[in-house]
Image 1 (cartoon, rainbow, N blue to C red):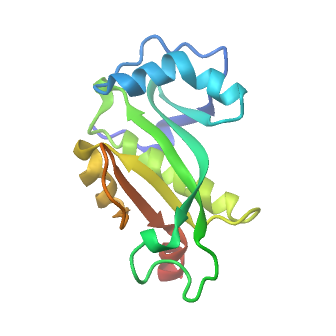
Image 2 (image 1 turned 30 degrees about the horizontal axis):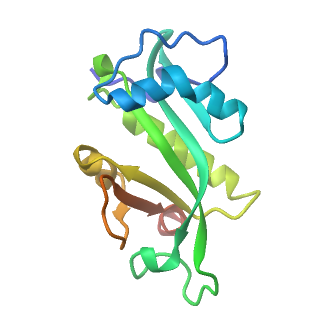
Image 3 (image 1 turned 180 degrees about the vertical axis):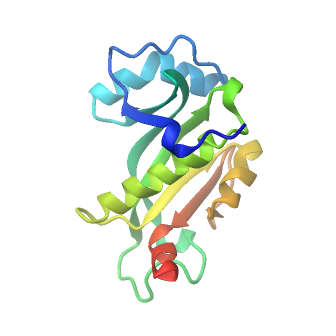
Length: 172
């Protein structure tokens, strides 16, 4: 059963949150949430957002500031004649859904919330693109929601981006 976005609650991680019940197939994501996310947030490196459904932690995502090389994006994205070497961006540093809640639109709703955050940020500072480095098994998920592979060599993860400004122009 899909979980409607209206039934999800989003909050920023605090020292009061109980993260012990969260489990996901990617151990590094689970370990980051439980052992490193709060310290990273206190040091102003990242901000972790928690997603609850019926008071159960069903997902989280971590955001950081980023930039992306102009030469790394596809033709048609970005601004023609842009004079700088990098675009300002918001990076999804981590995103995970609890194993018990996969295939229930939690990930989709987290991406929607991230898009709204990026749009809001862009009203205060330059930000046009959302970036993410994905594990190969997550590639299809991000591609389904409009992310494109960068024109950059691949390592153990696949760098992707979404020019959300372009999406906004197409919808208006």
